[in-house]
Image 1 (spheres, helix red, strand yellow):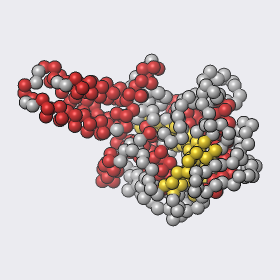
Image 2: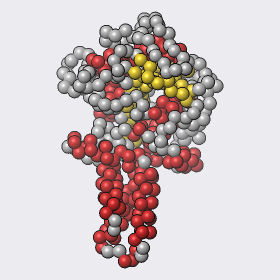
Image 3: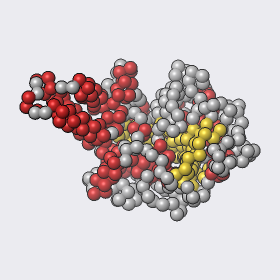
Image 4: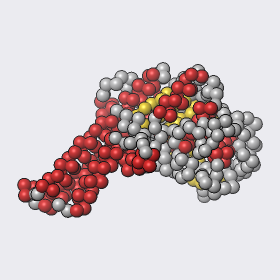
Length: 420
């Protein structure tokens, strides 16, 4: 048996096991489980096809399978067990559609159109078509109908950069999304996660802003929060120049970005740091340029809804419980909260789902607005890096959530309904 094949099978088996049963403790092992297992968790069908292909190629080179020794038979048996595990992962992934469907129903959100998101848990022809399409297009390529205006400045720091996504030749006056990436405040970038989200809404006529912010150890909590408010104020000043309506603004974020989103949504009036919110925007060649001397906003932007993907909702690194400003959204009053759409994997070993459950409970205890918590079966941290079954189910549900009359975010008339 070729040693290369043995190594591949053992590695695939280990990653599949970590995706199936990710440990929550100790923390180093839990984070390793996330890094090694998330690809297998989100794209198990791709891993299965690769393993089958390598196995078939190896067997064709070995000749008569009946003449293989005990060691080779054991490796092939391990490959078979791994394929069975990948099948289980795939079944968990496609169950995301029913999970988000049930979460919407539990929050009282009406589901218009059975073809878009069936209201029952039965597996329908629409579900099968959706699953096949998602399996064949797992990478979040930017559609030709969407343009990205890259690296606009909202401040003087090298991390004060944002991208604007919008539909080419699309309608003017659509809603605006502001997105913040994850990375535990120590890493990350504006073009790594949630690209499928940005592309989908831009196709629908939204103007989407994806921003970077300063990171540890150079920056601290006040810097991160200040940068988030800078981005919101920049958007309030400049979104109209790119075709958006900043009066209808939705915030979104992943992991640490969800932490920032929750804080800003619950305390929208907190002032940014000393930098001017009206810093000029520098566009790429040929892109429309925002006004160089915009009028500073007289009031903080109204957050129409907040979208938090696998968010962290605890205190910032070493922050005091009674510190000011509060570094956990659990310390803020949720009475004036906007509608929240929370999504978390129930197998998240990096940020366990218990935190999302606690935050959802806190919101529901004080807020009169809709609060959706969708727990994705088998979902790990970082599921939005690819356009997987889970992410597509989340996007379908999010569109339904955003047109809920209680949420008040309405898609502009004339936008094509082609899927993302």
